[in-house]
Length: 87
Image (cartoon, rainbow, N blue to C red):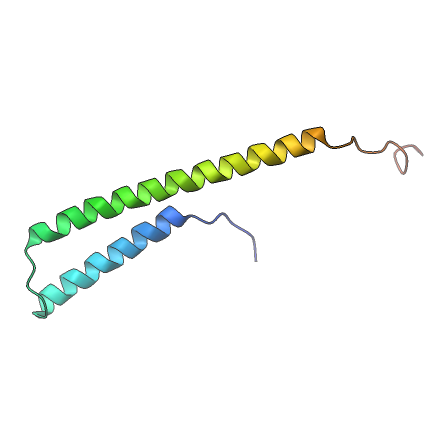
């Protein structure tokens, strides 16, 4: 299986949408009587939470990449002996 980036913002957005769908389904089934205006702030707040989560994950990923690049730059250069010296 190929490795891929973890995208926590998408997971948060998906969970928010599932929660909203469950709320609408409960309202449609008559199990819960919620006004339509109740769902609008939940939708907007959920999207902003997903945006914030994406931004934090991006900043963490960038910081990790910068640290890794600086470690590689400070590492000892590869040896010139071996198979390339034979050529």
